[in-house]
Amino acid sequence: MAAAFAQAGIPAEAVGIYPGGAAMGAEVVSQCRRTMIIGGTPTVAAYEGNPKVQAHGPGFSKVIFGDDLVDDWEKYIDLIADSVYLNSGRGCINCSGVWASRHTEEIAQAIAERIGPIEVKPPEDPEALLAAFTVPGMAQALSGMIDADLKETGVEDMTAGFGCRLEEMERCAYLRPTVLHCDSPANAAASKEYMFPFCTVVKCPQEEMILKMGQTLVCSAITEDQAFADRLVVAHHIDRLNIGPIPTIQLDWLQPHEGNIVEFLFRARAFQVPEEKLSPAG
Image 1 (cartoon, one colour):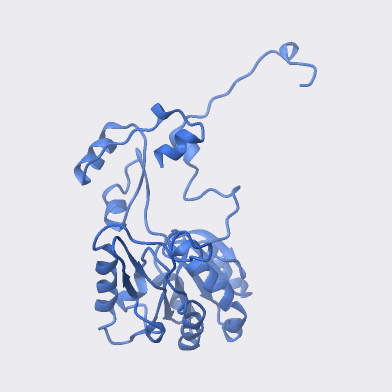
Image 2 (spheres, helix red, strand yellow; image 1 turned 60 degrees about the horizontal axis):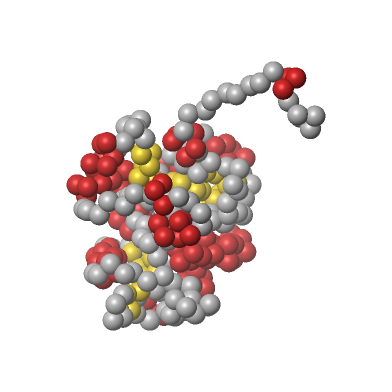
């Protein structure tokens, strides 16, 4: 990444690389006046409330159905599938949860049929949709965590019939798309997110949804129920709210993403000159 920045024209001295483990990262953060970090839930929790640190963690982005439109769920399967698997499901804006009060088994099966058949292809293949895990043992560990959650009553792997989830290569491993159905938000899998096309479809009454869905970076609410939409608007644990059939991965660069990095890392200043000093062009 540093080499790519330099090739694009960023001065090489503007980028510093400090090899090391967790202790090295913590030391860098402690020595800087402003730091942006990216990590898992424990990392974010460690810096919660620290004004010097802007922490970016898992997105837990979701598509949720209001009771008024959930019976038309089939119209939105492509939107959900794209939200789950595009960019290999590795973004915090990728959908990792679909919540509805009914039809959840059918929704989960339809998503599984849409993304379950996606196969592992070499990275140079223009049709490759899955990214490799190059850290030894990481893909295996994640697959094992999913298998552990599947032992809980009420959790079902809807993509099990489309082939083995874990595919190991000589120097890397892949995880194929996985869709789980959860009977309840209380299932441990309902609050999980992984760095590959993975989502849970969670059965939950609409009146309990906002309270139980937890921290959500992007929420696409498929509803025309104004009262429900109003409750979503004032939910502080939703950072980016889409009302209507908008993919979670759809970005508008005028919208800040978890806050504006420029405003965090830099101080705004004013600059003025006398009017007569301005050029004729203004």
